[in-house]
Picture 1 (tube, helix red, strand yellow):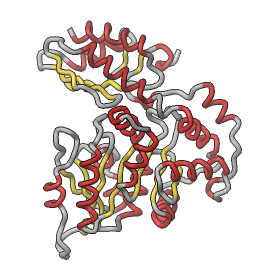
Picture 2 (picture 1 turned 180 degrees about the vertical axis):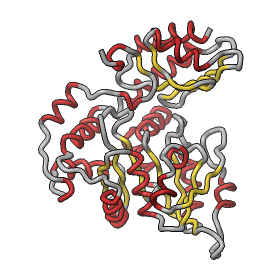
Picture 3 (picture 1 turned 90 degrees about the vertical axis):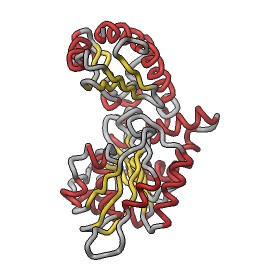
Length: 348
């Protein structure tokens, strides 16, 4: 039996499996050749996500890493620089692709405790127009960052600062809809409207379909027509051209129709998990904003052994002295309660 079928898998929301309804949508998808631009399901998905986020155009890509890289290469040229957080996915977890493949220099900036980059630090990192320096072209932010939601007021201020200095802005919104659902829950608004407001602040936004939204594959990049035209070329250069991709786009389209608002269930389960593990000696639980729970354990506790003990009892997680647990559509509230029992034993 596969791991995903026998375990409570809290390693990531990327482990989600297509639902029966999503599989049916994939099987029924009308397809064409997307490299020729004639896959109707891909085209419809691109039009839909662009409209949802208030941008003129969108591009369907196989992965979030490729979506971010195409955005960076569309915004920046050889010898240019982008400003980015030290723990941002584009800088820390995407193989250095901007530098390796795009000849784009990253300028990492330290994060504040809430996941933001201090405005003063952003301003100080912008290089003068001088031949000695890389040309600062882009500010890249991430929302959510490790499950933390960037405050709207901060995003407005940071993107306004970038524009004042002539910089473009990109959002790694892999979990944009988690942020939007959290914003809507706090403000009593609508998640789609919240996502639209966030996206409006940026020149480009990357959104992942294969995390909390539950599709098996795919991300989308949205932005201006000119930017997406450039990104389309870079997708080809990077080997991301797909043929009958409608079967994948249908899964993403199903997710947009059925899996956005239910992200609130994942957030509730993350809070349930955090509350269940709070108060143990030597254990510090970070209250989650969305669907990611971090647990710091004291040196007296062997974090790697905790992971092994939990796995032996059917609960999968990642980390060492900092443990990471992620809720998603394949984990129910009842499974969270069982995971709490297992983890409390493993942590003690």
